[in-house]
Image 1 (cartoon, rainbow, N blue to C red):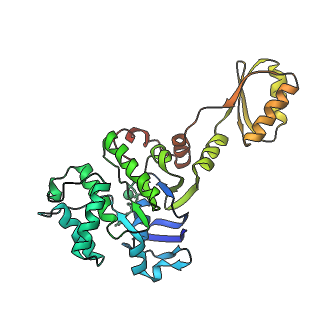
Image 2 (image 1 turned 135 degrees about the vertical axis):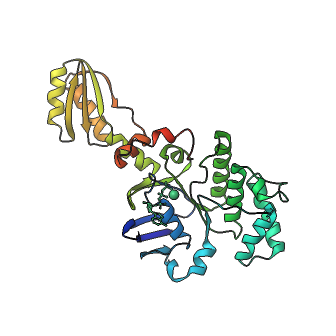
Image 3 (image 1 turned 120 degrees about the vertical axis):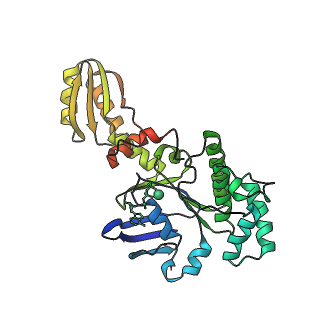
Length: 317
Ligand SMILES: Nc1ncnc2c1ncn2[C@@H]1O[C@H](COP(=O)(O)OP(=O)(O)OP(=O)(O)O)[C@@H](O)[C@H]1O
Ligand SMILES: [Mg+2]
């Protein structure tokens, strides 16, 4: 278990991380979601040991990683959101270079490098100049680089931003492959839906705080109860309204034609019980269910951000 406890970071007077708490189980593909400026990159750089937190702790099981940076670097592989220019450096030389930073011999780095290039679909490009790779290829190389010391955790900061749909699909397959190898992967994005497809759990960050964290199922049920319940009745509308008004979990009830729209703060069982009650009392229910919602709409609701939707086609994961 990787535990991030009360992480704080200020830039000048600006509080970029505000007591951030997060728990990530081993073997998980964890999605770290939040709008621009939420603090994802800051948190990930701190987790990777590249930036110092003002306060807080990271525990790996019971080991305090801030007290043991060597252990932290050994355990964690990091893929940044932007990568630099590498004049006259070939693909394999690049991996050897990063390997040497972790004390890996050239021979071992070449052996492991070949395996990693194969894994990310860059086999045969060992002698190509890094600068001549396409953007998507550079991103894959960067992933290979993050794995050169065989870390247990991988922290990937918006790894698929800017990739075309087919490269994004391939990237997802690589991530699933990493998970099946037993790696724990933490991946950030500002697009919730695409992470939801592959991640086993999700943390939503805003203004440097986690505002919602849980399994995809938990988050989906949070969406459920935040979506209004729509009941269409064939007959006895007044009786249905009276029954609904008695329910504690009901708020903001409106009637539109033969439909009742209401916020119902209950789980699936309560929902089913309410339906039974309506039917038992003679209401002819034609249709009954939550209004269609989506993780994305929940995300927009929570973060109050309207601008995300337009980005969906071009970037993110
Ligand atoms: N080096 C820095 N100096 C000053 N402020 C910074 C610095 N780095 C980040 N910030 C600020 O901290 C906040 C969090 O930034 P961060 O890069 O962590 O967000 P993010 O969630 O990764 O955003 P994005 O989705 O745009 O990548 C932002 O308000 C940003 O302006
Ligand atoms: Mg960022």
